[in-house]
Image (tube, rainbow, N blue to C red):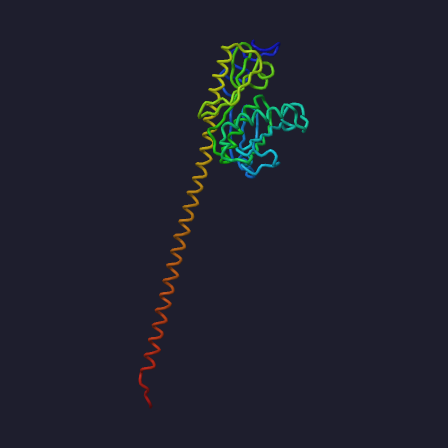
Length: 294
């Protein structure tokens, strides 16, 4: 069996340990608008990864010495929850978390029209609730969704996934075991509308042909993720549109009821005026009738 050392990474039938083919993504679930307090938010499950992202902004930049006069500053903070890994992690951020924060910021920033928001900032807060390999790529995908949910004008959605070398095979979307015991990984992020690559790293040794295959496989995976991102956003705005239509229907119904009530009140006023006229006529007739003395 393929693998590093004594760790098997393929089953006897040639499939990966979790039953996937070499070009297959793990189970993916995405949601947007999960945090009402944030300007934009997203949640992603990718395999056993569970990641929450909140976006705040564009808003005034603090501290002032970090202001960029000609464009928006994008800041990202990536954190692993203390319970997200097998052994409890210290709450203090590690050097690796600072590195991944910068990678995520640099991967999503090219998709933003930063020049439209000078002297401002947008802050991304990424919290990994459960880590299962590939948290960097999943965080980038969720961060782009959160930016779109915040209503920020974008050149396109950024999606990200890693391919890698497991034994002598190039596979897509490495699991935690494949990441640890495989021969290398190749995370890629792209802006889907333009196919611009915003992240490309390689950890391990790849031949030129393996590198080409890995990038092509990762870009295919990014496109599959983009279709899910797009569907999630469309579903959100379809729900909003449906709610607006229901509100309009209720408002129209209330308007009709108000008009009917007004008409009824006017009819009652008319009847009241007619009764008053009749009573006045009766009184006048009584006054005009001759007195009879007996």
